[in-house]
Image (cartoon, rainbow, N blue to C red):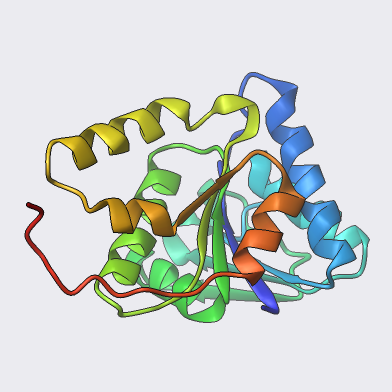
Length: 190
């Protein structure tokens, strides 16, 4: 893995633990000489991780739709800033460019990106590791719901097993490096 796509909030959240988590992830990526692919904002957790990576001289690839350049305040310091037409273009380019994905705490956009990558992996459009960085237990409720979906027969446990869940950047990146893709051929859960 060389490039990690990180999905995260354009806000910092109420608890400083979230920004601290973004800095910790940046530190671990820097140690491993990994590049950042992200949504190109200079605000919120996006700005925190991008600034830390750039300050260390690492490559940062930002991808943002034209409409959001002013709203999200596009990060002009990116190594490479790509402005696209639509959110769909942004998500697909971020999926193509990254060798693996980490979802940090974020809002509805982060959730959408997380579920899109889960779906692309399930359908074998891509076969790349996906991790939840569960800072401060942020994703505990979502994980509980996903296990409910497994119990109710709407989600394969095998699909859940592909999702890396960790509360430490080193744990995430170690598991991502060891990731082995698996394709689920049976659609119906019995």
